[in-house]
Image (cartoon, rainbow, N blue to C red; front, side, top):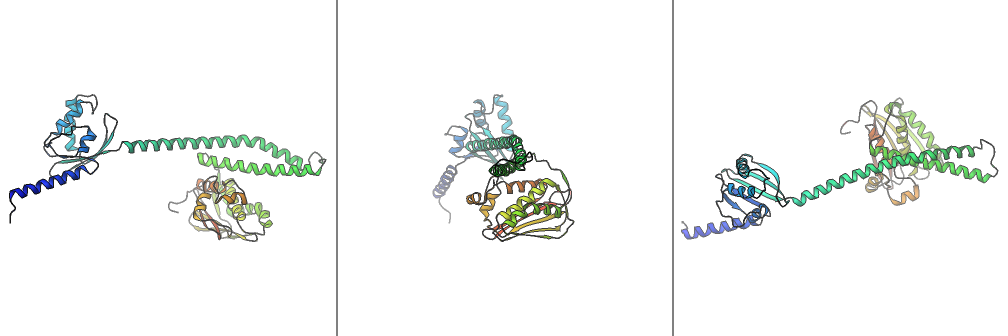
Length: 386
């Protein structure tokens, strides 16, 4: 059964109104020009963004719309006719395309253009002015933060050097007096005070050295002198440095060696500092009468694996993430109860990565921590994906 022409026209009018209502509510500007260059569909947002008359009618030529914009200077100060001819030719040739354009009022438009099967071209216009402004602000803020970080690192490096010079003199002279090299002191109290000065100066120097190392790592100015080093010998030297501290708390130090002749390609001072930091942390956060295990393995090609395990206070994921940040501590009470600057782990991580190695820490609150480092045994960096 065929519908009367009246109902067909009414149906088509309803469909046209629905289509136009849909176009008006999409939020972006939209235009469709047929293969002859005539405007066949658009919405008011299109007119608003391009600052076109709102009384456009179907069939308006693309050339007329471009001419209106060219005459008022939207495309620059060139010849309007030549500019329009060039843009009409590109309009149907350069599809699909996505480009940006700045209007005379400073609005930035993103234009996405696609060809339709019948040769028509549909264009979608988005106002990205605020988005671009936000991107510029983010880039500027990042640049300022990077500049501030560089300035901080340079300041810390300079300050550390300036502080170490007089501090070394204090350490040297206090050591001379504490050992009474030029004769006895008149009062025992003076000797006790001088020993305290000497110990405090050494502690302060270690803090300054940590700050200096951290600033060098952050500034990318860390210099390493690499050579073959015996891992067993390095561990032995570090254990001798902390043995008294461990024994004072009844903590046993247990070593397990897979290969006594295992060597790594590294900077000796830096590796001693890495081992010392990790072993000192394991002792510091162990419980009285506990045990710290140092395991050395060579179970991967070109890599030495060294583990430091304690069964102390441990950390949860959030605390571990904070502990790896410069000047961070697992929790505020850690500083009060155990001391430290919060630079030990960040420095250790930076030194290991500078060697082409990797630091992995596994920890559970209340159960303990395993710090595992992988260091190249040859002049090669850590393999990708290790």
